[in-house]
Length: 152
Image: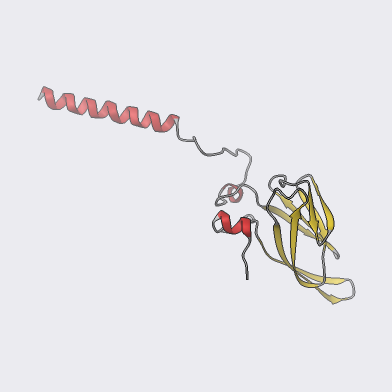
């Protein structure tokens, strides 16, 4: 009887020690983001994503969750500056693929597919189709596909 009680006590103490270890080390390897919204926290493989898109008649502005790795990008041999967390660049009419290449050559390209259709003079329908950067409230594919883009 004493032997059985001793085994129960040892198992109980062992369980308490295991739970204490798990409790103390539960966040190791994970970042803590106290100010993020629910949809921003649960992005697969990435904390860099599109937060907001703003279209005008002739340009688009993308605001990201964090500052892009390059300070300047090249779009068809034109320089596009990063201002804060945002990139603004001019749009071409109809469907177009925009590839922003980092000027320093050390970062990955950012690719956007946007349809910028003119319905009547100075009246446009803008449609953001996809990008190699995830946006909030969408399910993402593995990180290597976002970094390299989806080739058609």
